[in-house]
Length: 455
Image 1: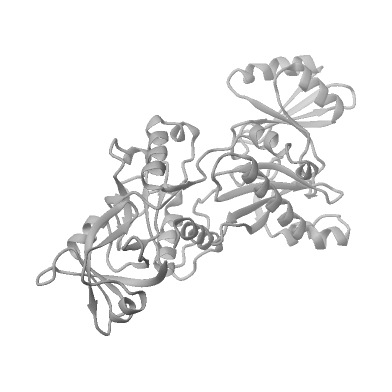
Image 2 (image 1 turned 135 degrees about the vertical axis):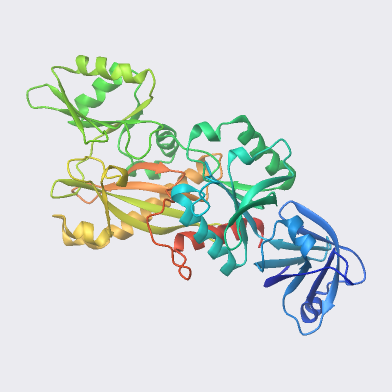
């Protein structure tokens, strides 16, 4: 299949019919596109019979305004064009859509809340790379799965009817939304009817990640001992084995609800629990009393119990690392970035939502009392570990992921450990938008979408 990136312009139909597409003479000859018989035009799920006519000394693609409206195209996009001689089809794309949790139509400058700038950045990247993107929420999903109402950017945000996309990035932020019957039905329907690719199609829970990775012996070196907290016996076993353990909500995020349990020298136990105002401390004379308190929480929350680690720290503030691992234009996993996160003030977790701060890996490890050999290899070891984990999950889980946020830790001996994996890495607005500058993470997202769609 022949492919090319072309500017797309519109014209008012008059002498030339509405379903006519104009292409440069040179491209028509090069691709051997017939101009004497009807062809198929496709854009996502959109299909239309068209006639191609040749335009001398022209290097773009022109379609009529009514046809552009039917396709949901804004003014003058740049798209990749592919021609298949066997099916006599001219494909435009890739058409990408992003399923987001909510929109705010009454605030047109920021219609997607905290991810609005990311959405604009993705629009800008599409214009540069030759792709088209729109955004929709579960509320836009209707019984008819042949088209959908979506947000496009055309000098400003507006809603219009769009075809179903070639590739859908699931950015839903709650399991409740993701598990809605309408959302689940839509995802199954568009995959089977149009061959749409949906990535990051499900949330991961902490226990699922660890149980899955335990199946690969080569990854067990990265994993602290972890179990589902099913009752007192597993709590007793872990607390007798390790001086510190962590209870983490299996479906938690942003450091919410984590409990740190430490055994004191006098045989008592102390807990620190994350809260908005800072960690809450409680003491218990024995493990039975502590379990009585925790078992109340277990009625509504499933916990993973995990071995406590002696992490590297800066001024008693623990340091961990977040790696963003994404599939690239060849469909292969690659590490886009690794950053260090330093816990804030009196917090024992490093999440930015809990007052943590970001740093480069080099700056963070240089602040710690580590051998120089450990410091010099830290970044490479973190990259290797995150890549191995992404590949391991991809091979063992029956779900499609295109990017993963992988939280890693380093102990005081320089050993790397896995803390957790996030299948919906944050896209919140924490960097200024530059019209000219597209972040590597956004470029890679787009490259993977182009790969999936065959562009």
